[in-house]
Length: 616
Ligand code: AGP
Image 1 (spheres, rainbow, N blue to C red):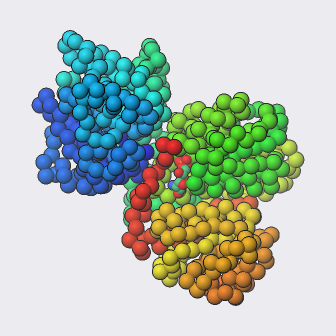
Image 2: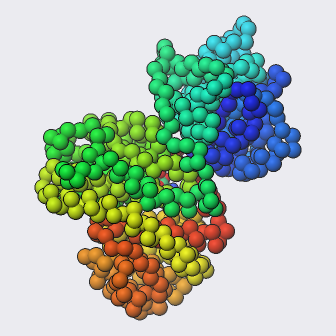
Image 3: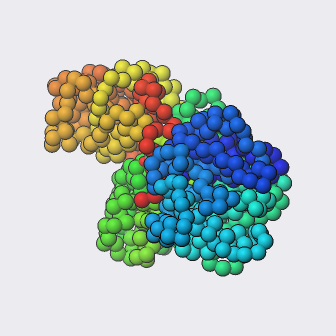
């Protein structure tokens, strides 16, 4: 996934573009670049590395102008080099383009262009697109005009197979920027005497909260005062101006050293926001209008499939337990990347949920489309409003967690679990669950924010535990029932930000091979709250201790038995078994965070990763 920002207005474009790019850096950070229209020509600055590298390059020789485009890259085609950094140019050097997505038939197009005499400087698919547009533009005779440039873009996009979110400028037309999208997000920001294009609104919310989320096949042409949206499929394209839900402060780190820590500490509020307005004590149930399904339709559901990737898949795993426990509905979870190719037998009364923070993950989007292709109602649980998955789903529930900038998912995970609990409560209450049971669930949910605040007060203790094990070369995470997926999630957090190998297993799997790994150098983290399987976890911990393996335990306040068997214990408040993952995951998020910081890792932008994987 890459990040794009474009600006046309009266101010100097470069600082606006760089600030916007910094807010999109979580989308990819292999290389970055800007192109500015200046005195009838194009000035470009681009280099490998973070946006800070680009900023230093620009400071040495700042380009001036009030129209420009910029890009931060997560490499798909072509290595991480200065030449492959965006923006890319056409043969004439007068057209500059930035792109998020994958042009699947770029090699065929490139070969054809080379036969026609084009020469390329990079190995990217994006440069091929720039040349293709330039070829059509140069072939159309007549004066430079907006129509000529848009027609050239349309002709080029009709030859393209793949996905794109693009912004493009041409030095013949210094008062326009053209954008287009198919499969990769692009939003138009409407300012006063200035307009913007960006991959997501966090890049422009400092300037405007009036946004138009472009649809697939839209082509947007913007100038300082106006914009026009047409469709590649013909005619004008309808659009709606939305008010962005969050403000600039939501995309700032504030007093926190990293976005990830800020987002971990936001969880009392984001968990509250995930249930705000969605609980009815009077009816002892949840109210979820976005499902777009009547009670009778919901009652007719005989099976549920949950799908997602990474952390979202771990939420799906817990959703399976939640739906079976609270709603007694047979439920199965599957990796989205597997679901899309698996051809899972599903009867007509199977309901599919896809879970995605970004709402742009390619595998999850493909799972959605595959499910709908077979006629199944498919609902989305997303955070990003108007994201592709949110828009293509037949309905769904927004997380309302605010922008999650840190690449490691934290607050989105706990929000997903709240929403899956609300769905389970709603489905349970229209089937078998009693009023008193429903009220109990609601009361448990409403206690969560305060319990999370209690856990966050243990931040210093958790940091000390993390530092104690900072020499670990690998770690094991173990849990049972609702907390087995939490073990998987804890392992993923540790891997992706501290680069320490970690694995999550059901505790009972130790004796089926895993215990062979136990040594004094391999710490095991047991998620062992005082629940229905607590005694089983204690036995597993003793198995590890018998082999001199260090043990960190996440346990329930007052449960002193853990201190007799574990080396370190982090206590959390008691709660219902089915809600315990929302609490037990927080110490694991902090454990991974503090270890990564201790090891000098880039917590918010871990190597090789991007916040949302919009390519397969
Ligand atoms: C989790 O910390 C990772 N950032 C990653 O596994 C992520 O959960 C996954 O890529 C799914 O992203 P999504 O929720 O935006 O679809």
